[in-house]
Image (cartoon, rainbow, N blue to C red; front, side, top):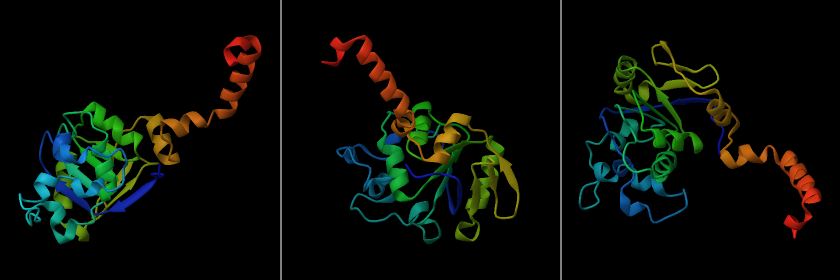
Length: 203
């Protein structure tokens, strides 16, 4: 998992509540178990029409936001089914941070496990960032995870909360497996001692 320490990127405003995981990555893209290539399906039903042509009115199809690295949205983002493909699609598209007033619990956890920073802010702070995001590539946001701050294009700073354990994992680029393997020496020692005490289990 890539380390997340600081991010300076264009923010795209998708000011809608209850964006569910089927909207983020529709079911027809769930046949794969790999993380690569899912960006093409991100918000597919909003990005494209029935003929597969781009919807020019959708925010991520507009020139100023095609390379957005931050998404700002409405409350209850990521609700619906617990598909891990949703954060995979966001990350493959290039979005490394989602900011919203609230998130669905499972989606929030899946983001953290895959290197995406989900930031929960009060609605009034989200509204300010949505207004900044409307200025496109001329108004990028700067996110500093270590100091837990978001700096707007005009210099204003907002602070955000995050669980210390998740913060550590993001900054060190550790998913759950990598976090466990940091203790591989202790695990090996435990297994060695267990085999001595109960040799029949090692056969």
